[in-house]
Amino acid sequence: MNVQKLIPLLIAALLVYFGFQVHWLLGLVVIAALIGYASWSNRANLLASKAQEAGARGDTKTAVNLLEQAVRMNRKQPAIMASYAYMLLKDGQIDKADETIRTVRQMPGADKLELNVTITEALIRWKQGHLSDAIAMLEELHGKMQNTMLYGSLGYMYLEQGDLDKALAYNLEAYDYNDSDDVILDNLLATRILRGEWEEARELADALMDRNAKFPEAFYHAALVKEHFGFLESALEHCEWALERRFTAVSTEKRETIEAKRDELAARLARVEESGESGEGDGQHDDAHADDGQTGGSRPE
Image 1: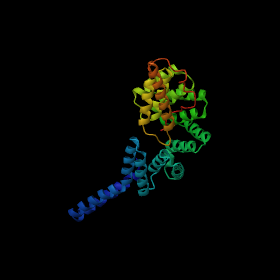
Image 2: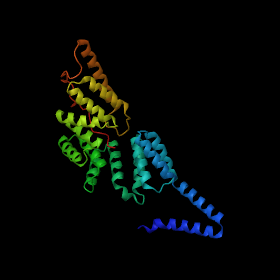
Image 3: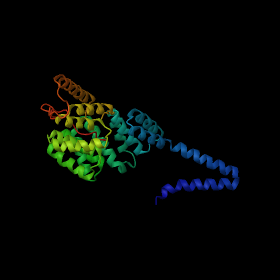
Image 4: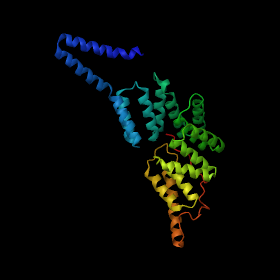
């Protein structure tokens, strides 16, 4: 039992006790004051909770603003500061995110957040163009512990590095660890696409679409699979779905890339319709392979 955590409760109980000893009205005033103080001191946590909800909705700007307020209110909570750093990263404020995560490293209790802090720091290094450093950090962390977010982040880094054998081995390991995580599924899907293993990719794309993933990369990669097998209308539809999702600074496919693929598919379909042929399952995939550098891994979040 942590005795330090019991001390404030003991003090509060004594204040209430002596307040009632003096007068019952004073006792009630003490209780009201303690409740007010507890609410005031917990404001940072309440804001952080609201920020988490905003982040889950994909509203990164609101999450950043709420966490910024929370940090101003309480600069002694490394968990809130670490969340702030990650949201800054997603919002594209890379330098500020780097500064913030360095501050977290110096805070008491930061060692308990080693997993999240190291992953965020590695993602910052990746966005700064230091991919090898990011991979080294995550590999060292993987030697100490395993976690779904870590598998998703490092699995994508190996794809970014271009070593498809290592990417396949690691992403298969990740899939064995958690085959129900959308990011891990998408990393493995992207690996299969880049390796030209289309039958395996089709199974993964179907599984990912059944889960209705929330990030754009999943739908884009599924579109590439549809395109390869000649289902041009479905591929176009998946691109449209991808573009309806929110993009962030850690999205691994650019909106422009998916828009270009959508426009290409639309033009091909128009030509097919003019010729009176079918745009679904017609085997028109001679130029639809995704080995042209227009695919990557899933969002590492």
